[in-house]
Amino acid sequence: MRKILPALIALAAAAAPLAAAAAPLNVPVDQVRRLSFSGMAASVSPGNPAIADVNVVDEQTILVVGKKPGVTNLIVLDRAGRTLFNDRVVVTAADVNGVTISRGGKVTAYACTPHCQSATGQ
Image 1 (tube, rainbow, N blue to C red):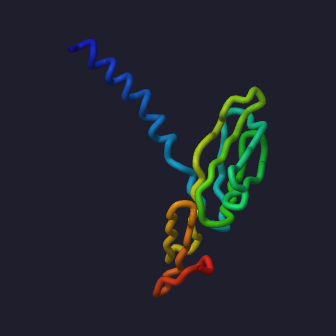
Image 2: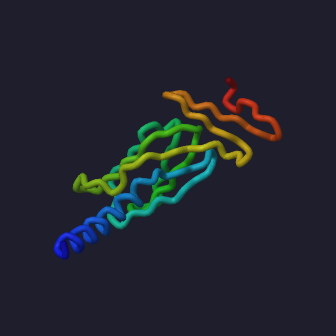
């Protein structure tokens, strides 16, 4: 039993950074979030640039721009093809008095001031 406990502690410690890395990058519409890397980025590819696009500042910093509510992904590779970042990007409505509903592939944003009305024209 004493040999199992250190192994479980080591396993939990190794899994903790993975759980923290699993959180998506959240970006409000018409706002920017900075994303920095310890390595040197050579390739930056947003899954759907209509939802979130990027501006490259330098090899270690990019700015992710929220363009319209939705979910996409972002992959950043170094010159050797190693992955520096590969995760979801969730773009939410910029209005704090709003609600965004994602159902299937359809995203509907509602502005709620004081009553909720569709902000996506639907």
